[in-house]
Image 1 (cartoon, helix red, strand yellow):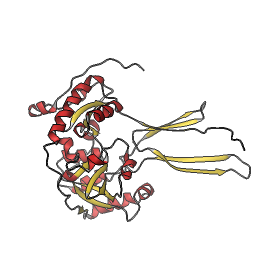
Image 2 (tube, rainbow, N blue to C red):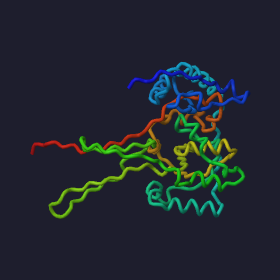
Image 3 (cartoon, rainbow, N blue to C red):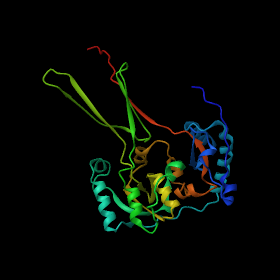
Image 4 (tube, rainbow, N blue to C red):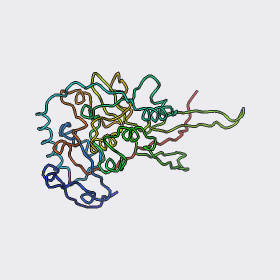
Length: 312
C-alpha cells in the first residue's frame, strides 16, 4: 500500500518544558501516536532497526537519531544503579482481599502458581525498564480522578484490575480454511490444544485456546535487580500522579527467558545488567525519553490445517 504523504512538527521537550509546552495529538498524523522511547540505550544501528520495525514516520528518523546520540552522551555521565531497596508487603486488609480475589481466577492461577509470586510494594525508582517505549496517550488515559497518592488502595485497584484486558478479534477465511486472531498484546498466543472424536467413527474435533498472560503489573527479580515486565502504562500513570511505590506481582526469574513471555522487543541482557541500566523513571526525564511518532502494531496468530500425503 502506498503511504499518504504527510508532514508534522517534531517537538523537542528539552527546549519546551520550561514554557509549559507538551506533545499533543495535533503534532502527529491521525495514524501515528506519541511514544516515549529510551533510544539512548540503543546503538545507532539498533535504534534504526527498532524505529523501522515500529514504522516510525520517515520525516522523524534523522531528528530521532540526533536525539539518541545526545541521550547516549547523557547516560554515560549517570551514576551506577544503587542496590535495590527492600520491597514492602501490602498490609492493607481491603487491598489484600482484592488481590487475593483476582489472583484466585483460573487464568491468574495458571500464570502465577501459588507459592511462586508475592504482592509487594516496589520503589518505582528501582525498576529497570525491560522494554524501550510506551504509548503516552494510552498511559495518560488511565487512573482517573480516583487515583490518589495518599491512598495506596487506589493504586492497587489500578494495578490489580481485571478490566485491563487484552481485546482481540477473530476472522474466518473459508477459502483457506483458516482462522486469524488479531490483538494488541505482543504475547498473544495459542496456550492450549485439544482433540476428540465424535462417536466411534465420527469426525475429529480440534479445539484450541488463545490468550495472553493476565494483564497485571509484573516485576521479575533477577540477580538482585527488579525488571518491570508488565503494566508499563499504569506504572507511568502512578509516577505522574506522585506515587513513589507501585503494588505489583513479584516473581523470581532464574533467567532472561522469562522476559520473552511478555514480548520480544526488550533490551538484551548486557543492557539490563549494565552498571547503569535503563530505569523506568527515565521515561519522565526529558533528555532521556525521546518522543517518537510510531504506528500501533498488532499481533496476529493464524491457524490453518495443512493437508499432505506421506509415503508409508
